[in-house]
Length: 279
Image (cartoon, rainbow, N blue to C red; front, side):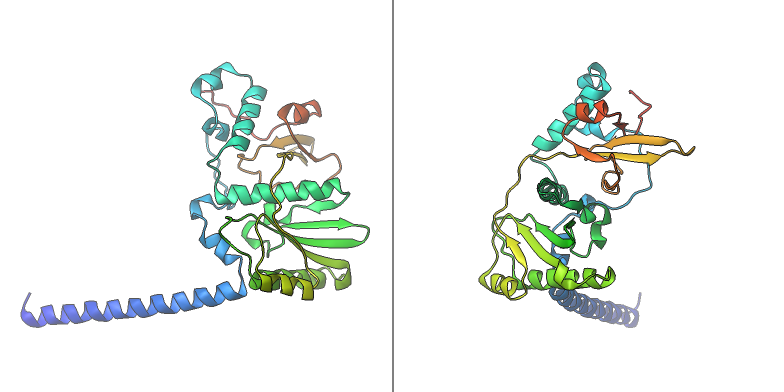
C-alpha cells in the first residue's frame, strides 16, 4: 500500500470513528430523554437481557426442574416429589434474577389484595414489557386499583417521575376502559421509601403509597383450566420455572394459585408439560 492510500485509509477510519461517536452521543441523549418520560426503562436497563421473561416458542427437551434437583433425586423421587422439591428450592434460592424477584413481589402483593376480597388481574405477569407500569389491576365494589409494585435495592429511592408515570398510566386505563377516573385509584407499593418530593406528588395526585412492604408467604403454583386439541377440558398446573408460567392467566372459575403440588393435584390438576425423557 502506497503512502497516499495509507493516508486515505487513516482519514476514512477517523471519519468513521467520529460518526460512530456522534451516533453514540445521540443515542445516549435519546435514552436519557426516554428515561425521564418512561421511568420503568431503568428497571429493564438494570436487568440482564437473558433474565427477561420474553415469549418463546422453542420447546426444550429437558425439564426445567432439573436445574433444582440432583441426578440422583431425579431418578429416586416420584413426579410429585420432584416437582415439590424443585418448587421448594426455587423459593429458597438466593440466586433468583431481578426479573424473578420482581415477579414474585407482584404475585405476593396480588395475593394479599385477593385476601381482602379484591378480584386481582396479574397484568404485569403475562404482559411483561408491555404492562405500561400496571403490574396489578384489583377490583372490588365498583372501584379499581391500578397497582405498581417496585422491589428495589435499599440503596435506591423512588422519585417523583415514577409517581407521574403511575398517574399517567392510571388515567390511560380509565380512558381505555371508559370508566370514570374517580373510580380508579393509582397505588404504588414498594419495599423501600419515596423521596420527599415523590411523597408530595403522591399526596397532590391522590396516589396511595405503601412503603417498606416486604415479602411474605404466598401461593406460587398456577392452576389453569383450558382445552386440548379435541376440545376436552384440561386442568394444568404451572411451576414458576415452567416455560408458559408468565403467559398463563388465572381468571376463570375453578382456577387458582396453590401453595403445594399436593394441593394442586388433589383438585385434579397435573403438571404443565409431560416430559418424555428420563435421561
